[in-house]
Each structure stands twice: as C-alpha cells, then as structure tokens.
Image 1 (cartoon, rainbow, N blue to C red):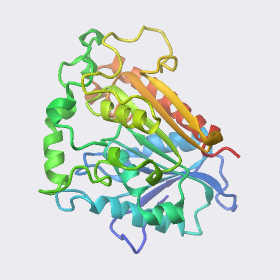
Image 2: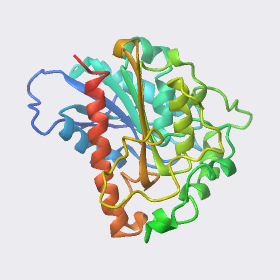
Image 3: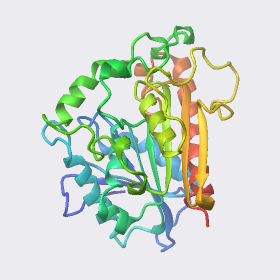
Length: 325
C-alpha cells in the first residue's frame, strides 16, 4: 500500500502488512517505522521493500516506510523534519492499524542517522513515544575524519571472491560527496541532530538496537555509541571492530557469544536497554545489495543468510524488551 499526506504530498510512504492480516479488521498491530539510506542524497522509499515485507511477514507486524527530500537540494536538517512530518501524519491516520503502545523507529545507513535524529524531536518524544530505535549501520558521528574511519575496520582478503575481500571500503569514494551535499558549510558537527553520538541518553527512546557491519567504515562509530549508551568503556579509534580473521565456515551466521560482536545492556528492570550487534564478514548494505555489487554468488548467499538471521534477532528483541506485554 502506498499513501501520501498533505503535509508532504511529494513524499509517498509505503505500508507493509503481515501476510495473514485481514485489512478489514481494526486489530491494532505493533508498528515499525523504517527510513531508507543512500547517503542523504540518493535512493527512494521502495529501496527497502524486500526487507520491510520480509520483516512484516516474519514477525506479524506493520511496517511503514517513511520518506524525505534529498541533498544537495535539501541539506541538513530538512530530512529530519520531513521524516517527523510523515511519522506524525501516519500516526494520526485512523485507517492504519497502529498499536500506539508498541511503536519503534528504524532505518538503514543515512536512515539510521535520521532515526536517531527524529527521535530527539519533542513532537516525536511526546506524541509518538517510540519505545525503541533501531539504527542499522548508521552514520552517527560527523566529527571523525573520513580518513580515520576507513582505518577502524578489518580488511579480509581471505574471504575469496567478491567485494568482501577488497582492500578498500567501497563507501570511502562516495562519502566525501555525501558529506559535501548534506552538511552545510559552517555547520556544528557536534549538533546531536546531525551526529546523534552526542545526544544525551534521555533524548533517545528507552530501548536501542544498534547494528553494525564488520567490513564497513561506519561500524566503529555505531560500536562507540552503543558502548557509550550502555555505560561500557568507549573504544578508541585505534580499536578496530570485529577481528582480523574470517569467521569459521559452517558456523552460526551471527556471533552472539563474543562481546565484540554482540552485547545487551538492560537496566531499570527491563524498562531501558541497549543492544549491539556486529554482522561478521559482510559489507555496508549487505541486506540490500544485488549480486552485481556483492561481486560473487558466495557473498550474496552469505548476505541472504545473515539478513534473515539479523531480522529474526531484531524482531525477537523487540518483543522481548520494548514490546513486551
């Protein structure tokens, strides 16, 4: 289903129902709002269709894909306020079966940044009251130079054919253009709406699930933010994410018994939490990229398995903590 609202008539949103849902009934559904990536400059709401449909089907929830105008024509903070307007419009749309007590906001890459940005706005905190934010491989800190970011991840030539084994982060050639387009000259890079790493804990939803990808220059800042929010030691830039060697073949797709790859911090009797997950041996956008960008059938197959595994864990976490009844 595609809908538009008067507040942003040029920005359609996309709605995904569980496969078995009877749309004629008024049963309220747990609702996950999602925001697509693309360096704030490219992409569209339909980029996330496959992921959104799969998540709605897997967990019997409503998924609503939001939208925003792109840089350089609309730079920071326009996208944050576009997302805010559509989020509030959808929430007020009585034709949508949104369970207002079980709402979460998530997004991919630039959309993960916008997730954390929009959740800080008073209108969202007071009216939407999302119980959780799910920033997936987000950019959260614009103060770290790009030249430093590419050194914070491992490079694994032993992973064989495909982009996973390359000695260069494929985001590194695009990031300077994304930043030029999105960040206005003279902008304070520590503004928490731009760099959510600097947001105070109380400005964010009570539950946060930060997902990083091991072979991604953005993973380290997500790891730092998760550690900071959980009250753990914050890794230095010299502390690379993950590990240098590839994961063992034939093992579990996710590594949940190593705190470099996963940890969960729960406080206030389960009323607040932080979850960190690092997807091993994959690249930025692994859950969206086509075969041509993965570069090999082996890498593509690995990405599909890890997409399903991470979606499963995300949904289980939502129902285990923020949406627990």
